[in-house]
Length: 134
Image (cartoon, rainbow, N blue to C red; front, side, top):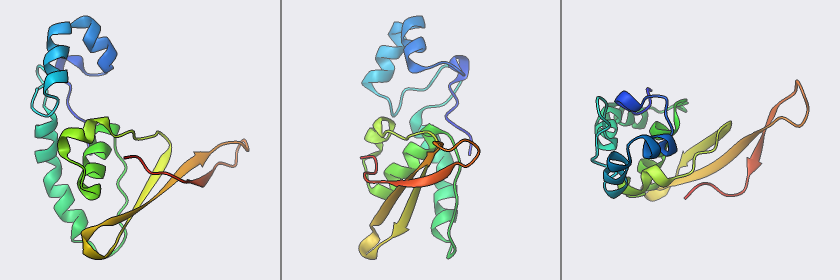
Protein backbone atom coordinates (compact mmCIF):
# COMPACT_ATOMS: atom_id res chain seq x y z
CA UNK A 1 0.00 0.00 0.00
CA UNK A 2 1.66 3.18 -1.17
CA UNK A 3 1.87 6.20 1.13
CA UNK A 4 0.14 9.49 0.42
CA UNK A 5 1.52 11.10 -2.73
CA UNK A 6 3.05 14.40 -1.63
CA UNK A 7 3.67 15.47 -5.23
CA UNK A 8 6.38 18.13 -5.42
CA UNK A 9 7.01 17.68 -1.68
CA UNK A 10 7.76 13.94 -1.92
CA UNK A 11 10.39 12.93 0.61
CA UNK A 12 9.98 16.08 2.69
CA UNK A 13 8.70 16.29 6.24
CA UNK A 14 5.84 18.59 7.18
CA UNK A 15 8.38 20.79 8.96
CA UNK A 16 10.40 21.15 5.74
CA UNK A 17 7.23 21.88 3.77
CA UNK A 18 6.19 24.55 6.30
CA UNK A 19 9.56 26.28 5.88
CA UNK A 20 9.58 26.00 2.09
CA UNK A 21 5.98 27.09 1.51
CA UNK A 22 4.32 28.64 4.59
CA UNK A 23 1.17 29.58 2.62
CA UNK A 24 0.53 26.02 1.45
CA UNK A 25 1.33 24.67 4.91
CA UNK A 26 -1.20 27.03 6.49
CA UNK A 27 -3.88 25.83 4.05
CA UNK A 28 -2.92 22.25 4.84
CA UNK A 29 -3.16 22.81 8.60
CA UNK A 30 -6.58 24.44 8.21
CA UNK A 31 -7.97 21.53 6.16
CA UNK A 32 -5.71 18.47 6.24
CA UNK A 33 -8.39 16.19 4.87
CA UNK A 34 -9.09 18.05 1.61
CA UNK A 35 -5.91 20.02 0.88
CA UNK A 36 -4.15 18.33 -2.02
CA UNK A 37 -0.36 18.34 -2.17
CA UNK A 38 0.68 20.11 -5.41
CA UNK A 39 1.09 17.37 -8.00
CA UNK A 40 -0.04 14.78 -5.45
CA UNK A 41 -3.10 13.77 -3.48
CA UNK A 42 -5.08 14.79 -0.40
CA UNK A 43 -5.87 12.60 2.59
CA UNK A 44 -9.39 12.35 1.18
CA UNK A 45 -7.89 10.93 -2.04
CA UNK A 46 -5.90 8.45 0.05
CA UNK A 47 -9.06 7.32 1.85
CA UNK A 48 -10.74 6.66 -1.50
CA UNK A 49 -7.71 4.72 -2.69
CA UNK A 50 -7.75 2.55 0.46
CA UNK A 51 -11.47 1.72 0.34
CA UNK A 52 -11.09 -1.41 -1.84
CA UNK A 53 -8.33 -2.64 0.48
CA UNK A 54 -10.59 -2.21 3.51
CA UNK A 55 -13.41 -4.10 1.84
CA UNK A 56 -11.03 -6.92 0.88
CA UNK A 57 -9.52 -7.13 4.40
CA UNK A 58 -12.94 -7.21 6.07
CA UNK A 59 -14.09 -10.10 3.88
CA UNK A 60 -11.23 -12.35 4.97
CA UNK A 61 -11.81 -15.12 7.48
CA UNK A 62 -8.10 -15.65 8.15
CA UNK A 63 -5.75 -13.08 9.74
CA UNK A 64 -4.59 -10.27 7.46
CA UNK A 65 -1.17 -8.62 7.70
CA UNK A 66 -0.89 -5.08 6.37
CA UNK A 67 2.57 -3.52 6.12
CA UNK A 68 2.63 0.07 4.96
CA UNK A 69 3.63 3.65 5.56
CA UNK A 70 2.48 5.89 8.40
CA UNK A 71 -0.22 7.81 6.50
CA UNK A 72 -1.85 4.61 5.27
CA UNK A 73 -1.71 3.02 8.72
CA UNK A 74 -3.21 6.14 10.31
CA UNK A 75 -6.19 5.99 7.96
CA UNK A 76 -6.69 2.25 8.45
CA UNK A 77 -6.32 2.51 12.23
CA UNK A 78 -8.83 5.38 12.35
CA UNK A 79 -11.33 3.32 10.35
CA UNK A 80 -11.09 0.24 12.55
CA UNK A 81 -11.11 2.22 15.81
CA UNK A 82 -13.97 4.47 14.63
CA UNK A 83 -11.89 7.63 14.95
CA UNK A 84 -13.18 10.49 12.75
CA UNK A 85 -11.09 10.61 9.58
CA UNK A 86 -10.27 14.27 10.25
CA UNK A 87 -8.29 13.10 13.29
CA UNK A 88 -6.48 10.23 11.54
CA UNK A 89 -3.42 12.31 10.64
CA UNK A 90 -2.79 12.99 14.30
CA UNK A 91 -2.73 9.32 15.36
CA UNK A 92 0.77 8.39 16.48
CA UNK A 93 1.99 5.30 14.65
CA UNK A 94 5.26 4.11 16.13
CA UNK A 95 7.97 2.71 13.84
CA UNK A 96 9.02 -0.93 14.29
CA UNK A 97 5.68 -1.73 15.90
CA UNK A 98 2.94 -4.28 15.22
CA UNK A 99 -0.67 -3.28 15.88
CA UNK A 100 -2.85 -6.37 16.20
CA UNK A 101 -6.55 -5.64 15.80
CA UNK A 102 -8.96 -8.44 16.72
CA UNK A 103 -12.71 -8.16 16.10
CA UNK A 104 -15.05 -7.99 19.08
CA UNK A 105 -18.82 -8.27 19.27
CA UNK A 106 -20.69 -5.19 18.12
CA UNK A 107 -18.23 -4.10 15.45
CA UNK A 108 -15.51 -2.95 17.82
CA UNK A 109 -11.85 -4.01 17.74
CA UNK A 110 -9.43 -5.02 20.46
CA UNK A 111 -5.92 -3.61 19.98
CA UNK A 112 -2.68 -5.20 21.13
CA UNK A 113 0.57 -3.33 20.47
CA UNK A 114 3.95 -5.04 20.11
CA UNK A 115 7.17 -3.04 19.90
CA UNK A 116 10.32 -4.50 18.37
CA UNK A 117 12.80 -4.88 21.21
CA UNK A 118 16.42 -4.84 20.07
CA UNK A 119 18.12 -4.97 23.47
CA UNK A 120 19.81 -8.23 22.50
CA UNK A 121 21.89 -7.66 19.36
CA UNK A 122 21.09 -10.22 16.68
CA UNK A 123 18.02 -11.44 18.58
CA UNK A 124 15.22 -8.89 18.21
CA UNK A 125 11.79 -9.84 19.53
CA UNK A 126 8.34 -8.30 19.85
CA UNK A 127 7.36 -7.08 23.30
CA UNK A 128 3.75 -6.21 24.14
CA UNK A 129 3.18 -2.55 25.02
CA UNK A 130 0.34 -1.48 27.32
CA UNK A 131 -1.40 1.35 25.48
CA UNK A 132 -2.48 1.60 21.84
CA UNK A 133 -2.57 5.00 20.09
CA UNK A 134 -5.70 7.08 20.37
